[in-house]
Image (cartoon, rainbow, N blue to C red):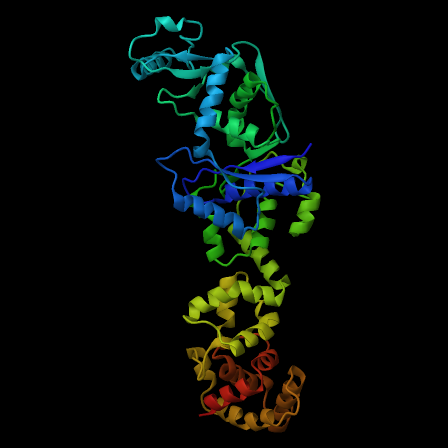
Length: 466
């Protein structure tokens, strides 16, 4: 049997952290078992579903590099199929027409409240003859759910979960206007898409009981359920905007790497011993649903940022530049020239050591990209005053005369000057750093000189010496 998982978001807002983790878990499990991962957009709520939200979901999944199999399924386009199944259940005697008006249902609920009863439909039309229907009332179609016994869900995360059927009423399958309800649409779509495993948040656990009854009524095989705990904020409450929870697209703008985000989301509820850093390749090999914990996990932006820093430090220099370049271009307001691109690439080994996000990496790389004369920060200007500028003027010929342009050669030339002049290394290195970078702090000085190259280094020294 081919295992099929799915991610089925509603396009009523951005792809949030919880949804992204659900998508990741479904993707990982399908890839782990050599199965299929499908994407369905549940856009039947026409009042709240927007094209912008749909695009944000697609963009977020693409940024996370969670590729889906086959075409995207749009639930709204399948309404006729959903209604067909409701009528099929009606024909089989597993559903019935109910003719209550909205006012009658409201009175029923009010009476139940006064009596301290659970709010549920009492099945007035369950066994009545439709001939008794009041004139002019369009009926809904309700599921004829089992009234006794219990519905059992063997959940792959939560274990065996039971509910007495008397607590589940005869839910509406098809509204009076002919539109299907969410519960029906989800089941029909999952069945038609061949979904074998439904991995979703545990806020859907109660839905599993009702949806299981539809499967049974239609004689369809029930998928395996895995309801994963929700993500909480640092205060233990359900994660929300007040905790700083953002759409996945915002984390992209903040300079997080997809690989780091995948790793962090993986560790929100799933674990492999005490290992925190797990590559996507290893995640696919190791991921098992049974390793998902039952306790809610807590989102911690500081931990995500630290993990992102790890991925930046360990990243391939060329790939990092490709990721950081849009941020650099945005800050510069223009594209990089070929020489500037080359300087950043040569200097990437030092730049990435201090950065935790691509935004920080871009900020650190800007000095490689400035046109001459480069801007100089106030702290750096102070280093270039008086004797600092004299050191630069004296050093320029020594650097210009180097036969080999390398870190080692530059360092040897500077140390020779320091020894000859009888000054401290810092007294010369700090003005030199300010002249080359326009900053008081930077990656290693000789590394910077090697990355800038002979011509740019000498040009910047000449500018600073004026």
